[in-house]
Length: 420
Ligand SMILES: Nc1nc2c(c(=O)[nH]1)N[C@H]1C(S)=C(S)[C@@H](COP(=O)(O)OP(=O)(O)OC[C@H]3O[C@@H](n4cnc5c(N)ncnc54)[C@H](O)[C@@H]3O)O[C@H]1N2
Ligand code: MOO
Ligand SMILES: [Mg+2]
Image (cartoon, rainbow, N blue to C red; front, side, top):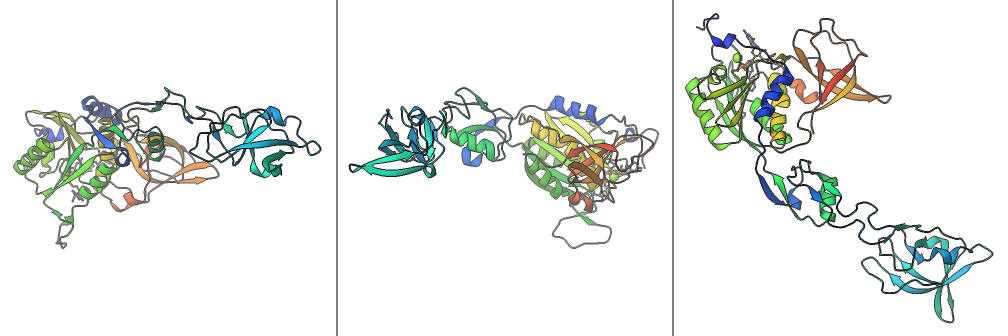
């Protein structure tokens, strides 16, 4: 039996969430990089700045199907005084005309084609008529056009030397399109942190196993696997072990020698079988914190061992989930130089009264809704640390500050937006 007075398990100093996040951030080191092909770069964090090697567009581009002209030639055009220009070329996309548009001439041109030398405007096809004079094709205009009309100038989008994508940016459709445009077919990205995950708990069954009295299936490992993926890491499920300190030590050693980061779930509180709490107090382990002024997840523990981070998250699903989002996610993102390692913080309107307030900051599962242009956050009906099922219905964590009064519907609250 543990002695309540002497057992250091009970002697925990609670620190604020921000302080705990800072202790982690101090230990986060940039992970190495690897080269990937552009088609494999989606959802990776780029490890290099990309500078535009050329302006874009690279040539003066027609924005319409029509005629490339000198606007000066059309200055007098009207329904009474039509202007006729000789068609001297036809310019499809991908073709660079060798003919210069001089006074009295025009060229048929397609959308996306290079505007020929001499032309300073494109008139859309629908505003023109065609005719033939002595067997030669002419185009007729009834209206003037302005200089530059329907001509996209060189460098309209990007000038040579512009910073296209900054190191630390998550690559999704927009960035991938930019990189493809500039021919960046191979690029440097941060290696995905390899994350070993194991659960502790004699009550845990594999998900394929039949239920037995007193036992539950190990759902946290799978939840964490998803969270690791979402945070840009590569999860490795190492199963579950019974509550045994020696076994946990062994498993942790294996995990630390193989992976960049280790996450455990369960056994961090003060129970007789809460072995993870003891494990992080051993020699050679720098315990960063083992109590945080938050609910759920007050017993969330983090340690630095053999130059690696160990996150010993609570076994309670709600606490495990929040512990990951507040501490593990920023570490995995920070290792990849992410510009936004932390969950985005918004202000919202509380959708319903919330009275469960105590001296620890609460991170309440919530659902966001936009009504009349305002973002409302509705707290989940049940959000106890031990409750698992409402995690799936949440897209934010509502921050309830430690305040005795409680909050009313309509109050402004800060929320952390879940997901990327
Ligand atoms: N006397 C005290 N008791 C407790 C305290 C306290 O301060 N004094 N803290 C409570 C709080 S807060 C939490 S949170 C939990 C933390 O418990 P542990 O992190 O030690 O986790 P376990 O004891 O291993 O399990 C708790 C709960 O979660 C279930 N569990 C565990 N692993 C999994 C898993 N992989 N998948 C799904 N569910 C899991 C486990 O069966 C228990 O029901 O302690 C309070 N007690
Ligand atoms: O860790 Mo417990 O979930 O604070 O409630
Ligand atoms: Mg426990």
